[in-house]
Image (cartoon, rainbow, N blue to C red):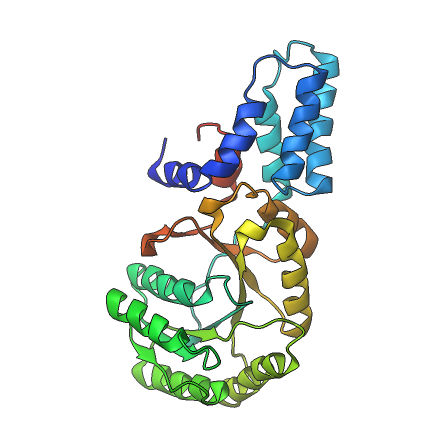
Length: 302
């Protein structure tokens, strides 16, 4: 078992415990099949994926009562891997510097800590990073990001609370360009689609950046609290319509039994998942790997 797979299995432990305890039973009967279906629904895999997994199991069950052909968990893994084709977001080599990664989402999703963790991950890959503190709306945002950046030795461009967020983005981009920085990560204010002034602020950030680089931001990623399950689909749909998303980061998956939501979100929107947050430590932000994810969820070895 690889170290990365072990990390995924540990990180998704609450979902794995729920799903694997049912799907790795040796006795398969009508009651167990019903329980399997209920388990997938409760883990927020969504109607379509649940139906596909259960259809595969029911067909095998009818053909071979003792299930000597295929294990239910193996069938589940096969369906998930098929449905998650193309779901893994990977950063291409930057054609120009800096590449801008704009992190957006609602309050409480973990954007600020994710900005710092992402900066560390990029540093670990040998890339240079600058963080821009564009959440000038929330009182504690700057201090929180400053603390994380000091802890992880990441350079930060910030201003005072209430400052114009687009101006901070402008200054941060210019600083990153002067330094030849590979990636500029912008942490923006948490917002809801009902807060029109905050949505307008996002549009202004984009407009100001494009005065400096017509392609910026090259990456617009929504940071989503994975513990809210398929409710996150509404968030992703709304932000995609208003800002245009190129990727997702799902956080707080270590504390939820709704890890199946990744499948439901990708099926609904087709937006790749770049990273998943599976713990509080900086190194707990990991690249999403669909194969490791599928095997971990069903409690199978790699």
